[in-house]
Every structure is written in structure tokens, then in C-alpha cells.
Length: 227
Image (spheres, rainbow, N blue to C red):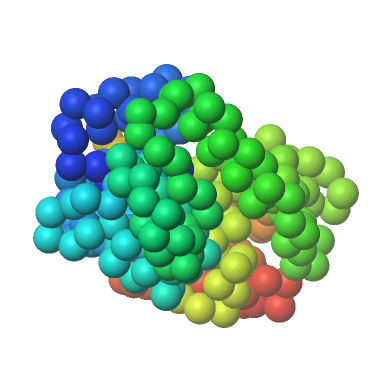
């Protein structure tokens, strides 16, 4: 999953904004039109969407509405359309903010960071002796903080949030590494191995992260049986 999906048909503006965001440490995907944006979001997901209104194929209001029907992903509308009716329409469709062009990039990034900070201020995720400190993106086992990477945390979080459900390899790779990644699918297998070494009593006979052979992985928590 990428941090930010930019939906903007102005190529120069889109590239400039993406460069600023990447320089600030965010992973970014871009789309020049509404239809492609929805396809990217469906396949890879995003933690936040920056959305223009005047788009080819499907306008920004429709994109906003369709994303909001499925998820609570933060959406910031960036547009030169200044009519009160447009602003109200964006809010009604579920946008979190409406910013007029031209905008100050520093202020936009500050708003983005503020949204991420508020979204992270949620309860920890706990299963047996394993706790995910969501605010600090940290894995805790038996009260001890583990030395885990951001991708390991994100992968374990997704598995724990879908406890008991099989998630395919393709789904996990697309959601965790996303379209902005140059990683190979094999990296998922490596990260699963690293996670097992850190959270399992016996990594070769896991009871938390189970393999569904030929398909993907399933988190069964403290009561699972190794496969």
C-alpha cells in the first residue's frame, strides 16, 4: 500500500507534487484520470488520496464518492474550482479537506502529516502475547519491543486485522509494496520468514502466521496450528 495516491491530469503539476512528497519520505502513486485512479486504488490501496476535480473519464466527485463507499481513506480535494457549491459537494461526497489551487506545498504537506498523525492515534492491536503499537508502528512481544522494519509491521498488521482469513500472496504484495515499488514478489516470502523468526516460538513450525500452500497466508493468532 502506498502512502499517497495523486489524481491529477496536469502532468507537470502532478510530477512536481509527487517529487516534493517523495522527498519528504512518502511513497506515491499517480494517475492522470479518474478511471485509472480507481483501478490503482482497488489494486494497491492508499493511505491518503489527493484528488483533482476536473479529470478525464470520471470526475473527482465521482472518484471521491466511490472510494468513500468502500473505505474511510482520507481524501483531500485540490482544485481551481472555487464555487461554494463545488466545495459543499466535495464535503458531501466525503472529502476530508478542500484546498484551492494554487496552494502552498509546505502547507499541504503539513495538512497531510496532521491527517496521518490523527489517523495513527488509535487503539493498539493485540492478540495473545503480541501487540502492535499503531501510533509508533512497533511490534511488541511479551512486553518487549522487537526490532522490526516498517514493512514487517505493516504486513503483520494486515494479517492480524484479517485474523482467520486467507490473504493471497498477490493481494499482500500489492497492498504492502504497491505500484510505487520496484521490489520482486519474492520479497513477501522473505518478510514472512523474518516475521516468523521474531514472533514465533518455533519459526519452522509457526502457530501465528500460517501458510496456505499455493495460495497465501493466514493469521490464526495464539490458537493456530502450523502448516
